[in-house]
Structures are given as C-alpha cells and as structure tokens.
Image (cartoon, rainbow, N blue to C red):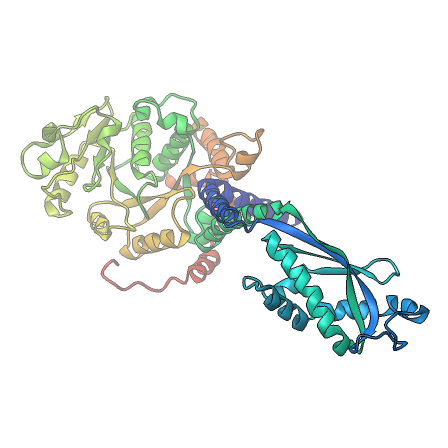
Length: 521
C-alpha cells in the first residue's frame, strides 16, 4: 500500500511538472508580458523623475524656552538647569514636530502641493544625537529646492507652535538644511521584479489549474477505471516514425509506434472471428486523436498477416486516408465516384499490395450520405475481404457516424493521450454504448511515460500496459494460432485492464454524466 501511495504521489508530481512544461510557451509569454509592463512603468517613472530623489538633511537644538521667549528661569539667558533639562525634553519635541498638524502647516508654508502630511510623516526621520539636546533630521524629496524650503518651513512652524503646544520647549537651527542627490534604483527595479514575478505566477497557476479543471488522459489505467473499457493497444509517441515517407507500407521496423501497431493488430485479430468477413469502424471523441493513423497502422499489419483487408475512408468532410498511401487520389479511384455511380467497385478500389486495398475519399461538394446506397456498396465489397476497416469522423462531434451500426459488427475507439478532456471522452463512449454497438476496446495513441520526460535512463516505450501487452502477444504467437477470442484475449495477463462495474459507477459520478435521451442517442 505504501509503495502504491508513493507511486501515486510521484505521478501527481510528474503531472504538475509536465503540465507546466507542456504550457511553457504560455508561461514564458505571460512572464514576458509582466516584464514589458514593468519596463514601461519603470520608464514612465524615470521620465517623470519619480525614481530620482534628493535627501534633505539638517539639525537643530532643543531649548527650554517658553511662549514668552524666556527660559525656565524667566530670563533671556539659559542657566545650568535649562541646559540639563533640554536633552530630557528632546523626545517630546521630536514627537510634536512629527505630528501631522505641524507637518501639514509646514507644507502649506513651503507652498508644496504634491505631498501631503501622511506622505511626509512616512519620509521624515528625526533622531536625538546621543544624550544631547541636538536632533538630526532627514527626508526624501523629488525637488531639491522644495526640500530645502520645506526644512526651513518646518523649523519656522516649530518655533512658533512648540512653546504653546508643549508649554516648555523650542528649537534653534544648528546645521542649515542641505541636499544630496540619490537614485532610487530599488524603486525602479521593484516594478520589474514584481510584474515579472506576477506574470510567471499567472502562467504557472493557469497551467496547473487547467490540468485539474480540464483533466486529460495521462494514466492509461484510467481507461479501465473511468470508462470500464479494455485497452487493446498502446501506440507510443514516436515522431520520428510518423515523419517517414509512407511509414505504414513498411511493417518490418523496430520503431516503437510500429511495434505498438503490431501488438494491437495481433490482439484485434484474435478477438475477431476468422469465419466471416469482419467490418468495424474506428472513431474517437474529437479530431486530431489519430483515428486515421490507427486505422492505417492496424490495416497494414492485418494485411501483413496475409489477411485480405479493405481500408475505407468515411471521414468524408476531412478525408486524409488516401494521402498516407498514395501520392495522389483521383476522382475515378475514390469512394465519391463509386457512390455517385461514376465508377465500379473494382475501379474505385486501389490495391496497395497483395493483401491491402484502399477506398479513399475526396472532399467535394457532392456529399456522401450514410444511406442505404453506401451500406450496400460496403456490404458488396466485404464479400472479398477478411477485414473492412472504416475510418470515420469522431462520434463526439458527429452523431451520424452511429448510422454505420447497421452494417458493422464492432467499433474501435481511439483515445489521444493528453489531448481531450476526460468528460468529453465519457460523453462519446456513452453515445456508442447507448447506440448498442459493441466496443472492441480502446487504442491509446501517442502515449508516453511521464517519468521518461524527466528521467533520461527510462526507456521511451516503458509504458506499463504497452510493455505487458507486447510480452503477452509474444507468448500468444509462440503457440498455435487459435481463432477463439476468449483464449486469445485471456492470455493477456493484465489485471489492470479487467472490467470493474464499481469503478465505472464512480466514473459516472465523477463526471456527473446524466442519461442522454436526445436525438444523438
């Protein structure tokens, strides 16, 4: 149990890091936006001279004069008692001079309107020099002349107000106010750092939130746990393989993707009956999940087992199947011509090799309908083949695909790894289940092991389900071939792919899927 929890924690951490890495362009873009805003604001402050300040400094002496101008001894000249008393009242004088009342009057006397008493109170610093009666002061100001005028006004107001405010106490200037120029670099860099950090934080947060608010398939075991479907094939992510010219015509490679197609085709052959022609269509929940590639790969490998296979392109809005095998698809050799009566079955079908034939489609204004004419043509063609593999549009987008249930025995569902939200996949599977068509299983396309993204020593095809299936198929093919689907499929010793009704109920509750009684059913 502890090891399982550790594995889940690792997967969770890898998922977070992978989510940020996947959205790195978004994270970098938002960080750069924050940086640009920081530069703009800092530049504006630079132009406005708000980041360049002057420090005003000076000092004064605290005396014991009263409101009538005399000292405590009621004389014009201080005696020893006045000299000793002055340091003790310095703190009271500082407190009074820093009061908003005196500061407000000082600003008014100096004629400064771009600063208020609260701002000045935060800026000004007064400190008693040791245990003497001397007090030093300093504050920041954007204009040197205004700062000097303000310092003089502060002493003038204090000399007028302190005797009445404190009864005993006054000030006299010791050092006249002076100014020194200081560049407030910290204030400039603050906006750069803060806004850049905010942009980075927004980018990272949005990437992580998107992962948890709109989860996709990152764990192949979830196919069984969430949807109660069997994984009959895992096609690893292999960009090099799909960059090859017509990769599906070469079924004798060591490419991970080609091995995945080989494994899936063996499983598929053993699941289907060999006593009659098998017609099934390949669909998914959304586009770009690899339905066409999966259809082509499975058909190629089934043909490699010396089975007669016809590959039909029924994704009539976005037909792409012909381009995987042929340099050019002409009208006279297409499903379009066959459907509209401009070509015979033998003319429309193109032979790729001795066992694989293809019936491609073209995107034309003349629409191909899922009607009885189309179904009759496919039935007629099926008499000469062991397998009819039909590449269709995504059932999650087009419910018209379900019309194929009238002539097909099964459907194969393709899930693109980390492509579509789990809820959207659930909706598409629910459509198929309600239509009554048996789902052969799931092909996970473009799978990858998250650990391999961050650990260099992990094999690129080290996906647990894929590895188990590959080993199981080797055991099956070593024995005498048997058409019995139960024997072939049960030989795949994969506990994590067994059906579990309780898990499916949890998945339904997780997605909040309601019974769909609309026309799409």
